[in-house]
Amino acid sequence: MGQKYISKISHLPTCFPTSGFDTVSPSRYLTRNVLKSFKGQYYPVNIGDVFDSQKTRSLFGFGVTSTIWLARDLQGHRYVTLNVYSRSEANQEEFQIYKHLN
Image (cartoon, rainbow, N blue to C red):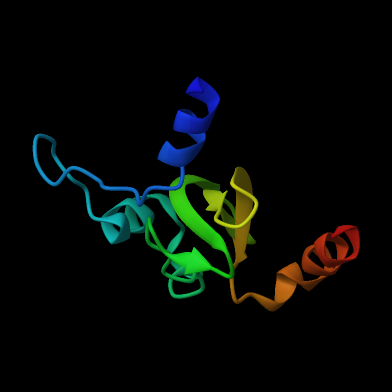
């Protein structure tokens, strides 16, 4: 019975608190940490955005070719990582490797 209750809870929409903490604008975070030469190449992902059936939950990190997000698969009901590639032409080889693996 407890397992059914936990399973049902995971299907509820995520409600984030709106007070009780200091917030930092995501654009400020990326501006401080990404080299200026990459400005404008990253897709502006926000927590809660849905890509296909994957809802972003948290930013894991970023690099030259992509940002990596923790996401919830809304159909498979599991956590996954989501790589969102930058617009750079230099990362096409890595993208083709990932495409082949999937």
